[in-house]
Length: 78
Image (cartoon, rainbow, N blue to C red):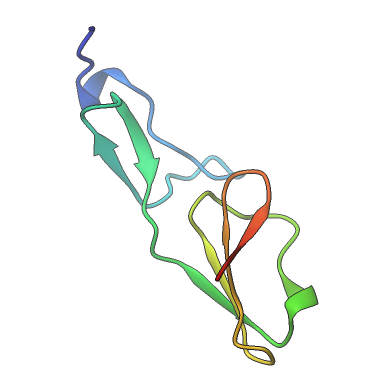
């Protein structure tokens, strides 16, 4: 197993090239995004289609349903 230090891997950046909130996972040897953002929207159909990052949440005020972005799709929390 190769151990990689935090100073040897690239930090995560958004679409504009700016650093996103993140932490270094020493076991995986990579930076991972912090799960701290929840978007509140009027309804189930208002979930964002762009600008998302893994772990981001969406809360529907209309139905009180919650989803998290898994990197490729919104996954509902049951």
